Image (cartoon, rainbow, N blue to C red; front, side, top):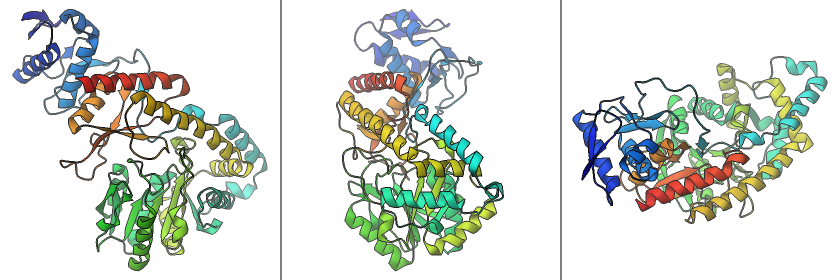
Length: 464
């Protein structure tokens, strides 16, 4: 067992040959625990430490990643690695970070399309057309539900593509789905709803928005057939579902469960909020029709341009039952948040001219190919149907999920996990561990690199 220098006033006992990775882990862990390496101390880069120890860089990357997952170290690509305050993974270093990073980072977090695919030319043309031709009244304070031209265009689009039973008067334009959900929380509260059931796992941001509206939250466990209506309690007055492509597990809500939820809503005088966040993107089968058509008087249908065009559009829509419309419009007026008239008119123009449909067809082909390439390169099953902008990759344990996320962060690869990103209502033992891979996010020139980096990371962590 030889002593190797770290480039600091510190020596570690690290064996030569097999077992060097675990020995380096133990030595660094002990150095932090004992105080020989204090919080904020910068460590050598993986290349220099690997050369100093005579081991592969991959071994050092794995060691750093494991200790980051455990909370002993912290680091980001381009800023190095440093000793964390014990028990805290996310800390700021005590040294000044470099203003720029040496290379681009790879983002595989879910929830975003390829932003470089935004139809700039079509959008610019639409803005020019509506700027020149819009009635002067369009630039006045608008109706809280949105401009009639856009409400009519959206009603036609969702009826044609998703089977929604909608008229222009049932559409309310929102500043994206998060804004729409916050408004719905206020509207439902005024209708006497005090408790909302949400899918488990599900997006934590949605639970936060509903709690901010005063709602209690009840979890609905998600299995192979989607959310289980058996989780509905007497207190629940509304249920938030992603029936066409459950987020994040990717399963489809079974027909019999759809029927149970809609019958429950009628019997309870409650509501279902159908978040159709990526309904345009189906690859292996015909699109699943909207649940709203089963009970238009009880189901709120929600869509947006965030996944199809870009989150920065801040443009969404709700198709609401008559009982919800007036409380919802009051909530819009109380908050004062509406989509700018020019954006509403331009989006209506895209819909009416077919430019939006052409864009969807173009990017759908790209995302379908990427999902197939992801499954082939990882050579492991992905949960859920072939649809949307993300895929769920199960892993063996919560520890492995955290190690993948932490090691990926060090290597410049941004990942989300079911546990690390808070998707479970309560992260108790036995809950599935998985990565949620946003394969749509990288621009075309970065996709191959993203795919190879991810595959190498998964292989390295698995063989460890």
